[in-house]
Image (tube, rainbow, N blue to C red; front, side, top):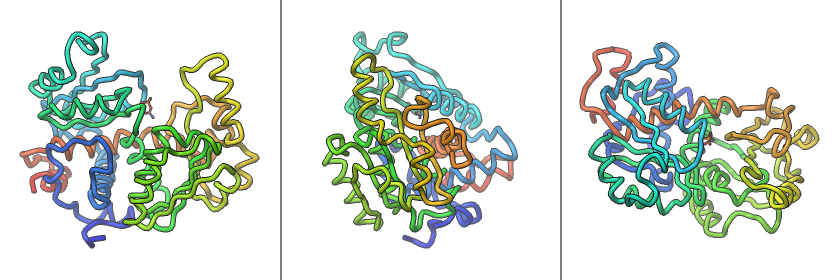
Length: 350
Ligand code: CP
């Protein structure tokens, strides 16, 4: 890794930022499109922005800029964190719900993308299909940010999770993360992709007949060849949590009802994160869940509300990480007058 990229969170807070203009105008569809060094640079920018936020909520790097937010599916964290983040950056975010705009059906993704590009500075989209996001980005003249594609990934969440891990562990060196339960899910894929890019060993523990897709395994292992991270698949939750520094889980079911829901509950029940399983975990291990959760299903209250839980830090960090991504992708040509904002302002110019 080049010396300029900080390895620890302490270094990240103190070291000068790398030039950020190289991010300007790029899309953020999957973190496979960014090098490990670039991901670390975005994380460092998030660390700096979070420190600035502690002193002053408003840091108007993007006055007058608008973020269009397209949501095919509901959201609490993604919607509120992007909107609050744009407000704190001095800009504005617009919530656009299909059915209330001309998508779907009455206007094409192409035309929607061209129009939003004429009117706004960036587009964030949550779509059912990754192909819709790719189509949106194909025609966009402004950066497009992935806010979760149900059939592929949720990398803005998993890069946020990397920020939470960095804050908690201090560095990414020598860490192991165990993901329990729905390891075939988009969230599991994202966590595995991001962790493997950053050098964190990943253990995916799910039912033998519901393992991570082979194509995703191939990508994670390819990341590991670069970073040194390993990927282990298991159907044994106790084996998975042994020695893990972070234990992550996600919803087993959401909108499913009746027998379909019961089948999912039966399938994933052995992977519930509860006190009994936690007794097998490494002392000091931390619990992660991107939320929303169905309490008492994938994890019990004693875990979610316990001292091991990072799940609400993960939610807060969405805003700080996304401010970094938006700022880097939208960019700025103006050095702020406020001396406290000038380090970031200067990095954005070069
Ligand atoms: N984790 C997450 O993306 O939450 P929302 O669905 O509430 O946005």
